[in-house]
Image (cartoon, rainbow, N blue to C red; front, side, top):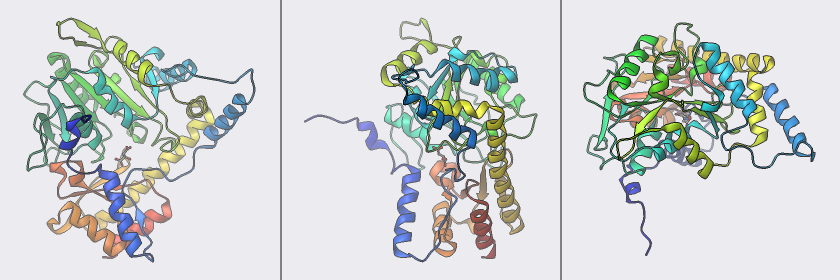
Length: 408
Ligand code: MLT
């Protein structure tokens, strides 16, 4: 009989969001009258910007004409999109990133998991706790961890707790780690990182030969001009960081699928024979072999994000969700909840009342007011006793959900 990848058997339960969906669906089936409001998974609700739709419709027409028809595109993405991104997202912010260092993909979730293909098996890997569960689960699948312990932590991973005590900002480790996952603005806590804080990480990584896997999927929600949008705003980051970006949350592409990963050509890691190898070459090789690129139509849609109209429409979308976040923070704070995040970030992180466990609070909200959030413990052991509320929903639903929660 064929054998399996036994690492999958180490995974604790189902992936967090399908597990939530399963519980919500069971409740909905048993309570068909309940008008459930979902503020759980960070999935956008507002329509795609008109500029993106128009560009995609035009791209469909291109596909209908032999002279402009496209077959396989470059696995790395079309040059015109990579150039546009390099200019607007990086060079305009003073980041020394070239278009050839940008790889277009179908999602940051996929890329943060797939990136493990190019790293060795003996790396010491650090994650914050709580953390976006994909970073942990993909390391388990790749065999980079031992078993899960009774605390819900996997042996072999280094957990950096983020709590109220450190304002949800992980302390720089005293021990040496090789790979570090950072996410700012943070999923799930909504915390943000200053330039000084990122510089401390870059200095650490350069000093230890470590690599930072920087997830900037929520950078568009930064409105404070002093906060960095990219790790490459920090000197030296080209030599120690890979950055993940997405069109999902700023331009509403969660269903359309387009993202990008930046692998600077100066970034190196060690081979078994101790020689230093450029990670760009490995990622390029990996993508060329395992990926056939994002569709031409979707890439044209993503390009339109950077047009004058696109920029204005994306800003309006981001402002809309940020206003939702503000309403959630104000209402919950007013009702006596201990609330964090929600500023420069679309996630609100709250302490569960009366020391309820995260899942007990989830069940209570679902059953009594029919509002869905995400239990903090689903993001890691240190998330126990916390709860995440997403600002991605219509204004009407956000207001109604807050009315229901604060009335209780
Ligand atoms: C979340 O809710 O944490 C995100 O939607 C997950 C994701 O983007 O994959």
